[in-house]
Length: 495
Ligand code: C2O
Ligand code: CU
Ligand code: CU
Image (cartoon, rainbow, N blue to C red; front, side):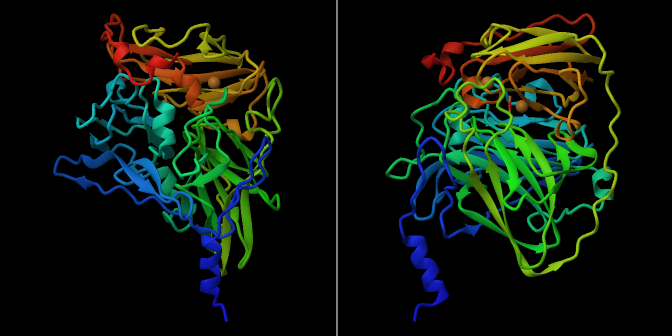
């Protein structure tokens, strides 16, 4: 007689066939594994009150697909990184060692912090070197993330596995009765797509016009994951950590879920949705309700918003992909009902405010220019609120990410934004020929030397130069950038 365990083992050892072709239908192996939960990064708080973390960028081997040993890169582990967690008003400090064979950097995506610690292409860490940024957390509770930002090589570094979550807590968030037991009913979920070569290495060939597009979904570092849920409600903090793929997330039975947060933190109130789209770099927090014993699959459906996109199939817009199966246990612990109100948001500007600047996205350019490490594209006076309009003038998908700030979306083609765009954001998907009006406040952190970046977060586009730089200046301060030898930058040779 074959035991259940033996049966499962047999299944796991059988070769798994992956669907290929232009329209991918589910690539989930039949035998799933439990979703890995990134460990919380250890930290120490000294007498000075500073919370100190240590991270090491390193190479390793990961069983991303069961039975295959894949060389990967990770922070303090073989792939991804530990979840960094700190509180608003807390001072944090990092000791980051680069044990990789090439220069990298660590950028704190979504964080408001001094430009010299932003971890962009001006803060490279040489192999064997250590970088020690520190700053005070000055923003509301949110799901942020950290990842490399070496100019011309960001896609490669992230694709090999370097990215981690950075969770900020605050009193307003603590006071709300939301699922908040990390790894139990509060789950970080990074969604990535990968292709593997016949010998099981990550396939870095065949870069499409949206970058590396995979046929295998990897959640928290592995393919074919499931999550056992022992509570009535579960909160998923979802990050699109892919190079160029968009996800249109829904559950297989189309149940509604509650959207509670976007990139920069909790919404004013939960919004009931059946689908939510995430472009690379964007995050959402959703709460889904489960009944005892049920199985429900989080899935990415074909992208419905494809206005102005010319080769939707080639960009993965037709694909249906299973992301994660949620399996409720036979008994689930009751959860509190969701609060009707979350965190209020005061409007930074009226929708009718005339724009300060306009950005056109096309090919690998922003406003007809490709990134130059030695060119400051704009300077912004400190303590100002600016209104930016952003337009995708292309027939490719693009998005728009701004460092240093979280922005509000005042309008989409002059109309009020839908729920998924009505909270704090640092990255926004741009449908072709649609005008997005954003408002943001540049509160402090002036620096005449180190710029912040703004760019398309499709990593191949960013690497190809779809990025610009700005300085935040104090009154009377003049730009004094540090000349960079850009020929020494990794990946800069392949333009
Ligand atoms: Cu997540 Cu400038 O990047
Ligand atoms: Cu960023
Ligand atoms: Cu782009």
